[in-house]
Length: 182
Image (cartoon, rainbow, N blue to C red; front, side):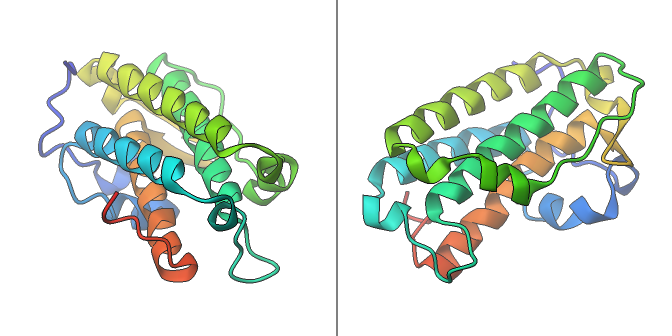
């Protein structure tokens, strides 16, 4: 059980940079841990149900494949969780940003099996849920600097969830992959 009551504890605007507001607003459920659990189950099932053709699909030549989107979700969650860990522990050094395009390009996600991606995704999500549940209220509200903006640990949990929702919406709208029934 989390040491912070997640119900009705959305981050305040001063806990994240303007860029992240869109992601945070996509998190409909006030309990972000429940959102992460439900999304994790949904995405794991989605990956398991993809065919190789669907997984390698790009709606345009210059767009990511579905496997690359999954890899991007994994990379981004790992980076945001690392930021949350560092900030929760009082890290005072500003944490760097990252070039998501370069990470996807160098991630070799298209060469990986769907099983490999789903296993990594599931292990990462479960570990991060445990990590966020371990933080005290003080740790969750602690702020640090990442990507040149002030951000709280609590906001990072919401950013992970909202970022994933953003990409699930893209899979629905641009890739014609149903994510609502999974």
